[in-house]
Image (cartoon, rainbow, N blue to C red; front, top):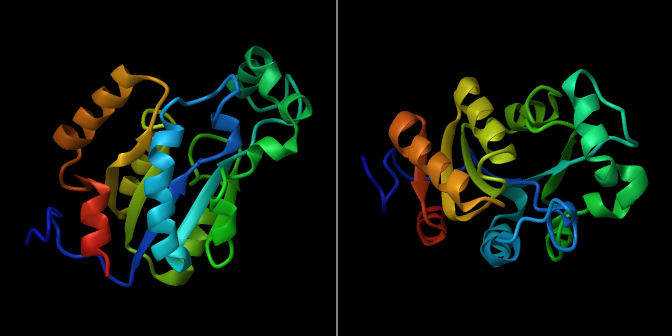
Length: 202
């Protein structure tokens, strides 16, 4: 049954807001800056204010120094040597203000790759809370959000993507991924705007 634009019913007590990588690392003047990040931040703040206890922030933590990392990640951090911790400083992994003010009760989970699933911390938190639905915001639509969503699908979570609270550094691949979510994952992924989430998640 559709509820206020949600194809599979209302959002209840077993729902969590999973906010992906809204960090200084991805804001100006970083080399990894995502131009839309400041556009979507106020919407994410609005949801986090209302649902702080149900919010989990992930943070992408780069390698400590160039050449670190397993397999192709070593090559990645040779290419992006300027974005390693030793060069950008540990403060760059922090969440964008005012998101840290919601922690606690919101939680922060660090990860060292695109996906938050292989390291196991996120799944442990969700399982302990008996979460079955994830409202996903953050960035980038076509990288870390993609990895987060595909992992959530494989784990059996209902995924609700907040379309106007996602950001990318590429309009073209953002649009392409939104088409993929609509056309190929419709049984597992719902796409709605923030106003729907705020009205439907009471």
